[in-house]
Amino acid sequence: MSILGVPVLENRYPVTMDMWPVEHKAFNRIHRFYEHLKEGRLTTTRCKSCSHTAFPPRVICPECLGEDLEWIDLPKEGKVLVFTEQVKGVPLGFQAPLIHAWIDLGPQSPIPRLLSRIINCEAGRLKEGDEVRLVVFEVPSHPIEIKKETITAERVYYAFEPKG
Ligand SMILES: [Zn+2]
Image (cartoon, rainbow, N blue to C red; front, side, top):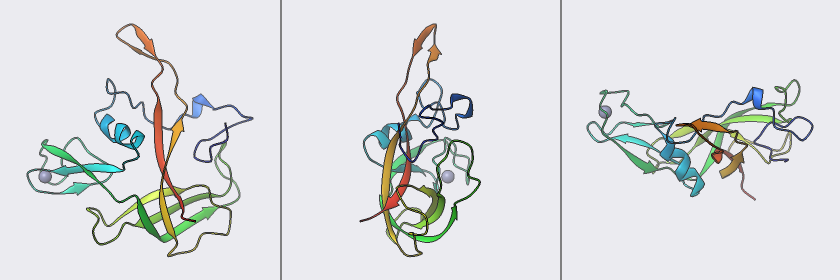
């Protein structure tokens, strides 16, 4: 496996360093976020009571503590506002460059910006103002036990990559 979004050690996924959530609905109350990602959609939650939109998605509104939330789509493209690019000393298993960026999602977006990794980008290439788009990639899974049954649930996560 050589997906730039996923840490790999000698072509093996280091399970002991697993940083992604168990996304199966038996364990995760925002499992629909990951199901939407599998459909290529980036989504989050909006409170039906006070209209507050949070990202990452929540199960309780952080403004009014309401629990009646709805799922809304976010733009899948944006522009890099500011970023950091780590080329040395990246965490074990990750490949350099390790890039994190604040991404401006535009005036029509329910949330103005979000923080994301940028993948599929060579060191020194990214610039402020660059256009980026959503990338959904598979994350290795591991067996999990649900009611005495062992399953291997598919997992995905998201990042952004430069357009063109
Ligand atoms: Zn609310």
